[in-house]
Image (cartoon, rainbow, N blue to C red):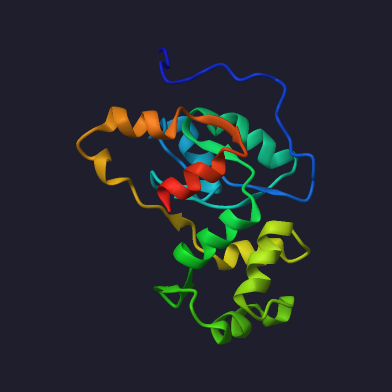
Length: 178
């Protein structure tokens, strides 16, 4: 069986200059059944969903598996702030609740030293000590699909580009899909 959507992956995996930086892979393509488990572990269950991931040995290995299906890179502070302010949600009970109230954040994340939205943004961007609970507090981001995507899929793929590493260009994708 041949996989026509798989591109060969180089052994040199691009890492950021600053080791305390998260990566952000939005899923832009459907996945094969073999890759589905890894995509679920990264919390990218739907196309045009995204989540922040801490860079470590395991996440690098997972990125090598899912690279043909995601565009990924290292977002800047402005992009992280825009994503969390506009699309940030958490789950309270069984409901998705937008992050608009600092009291809600303090109630659930106060024990980790996160008392407001800016603390949450800083913790995610700087990959601090409480990155994992802060990231688990956030639900995966549901990104918007550009309006012309329904009628012109080729134009959308031209706008987004192909899957793979984008570096700082991931910020343009954040602005396009946010």
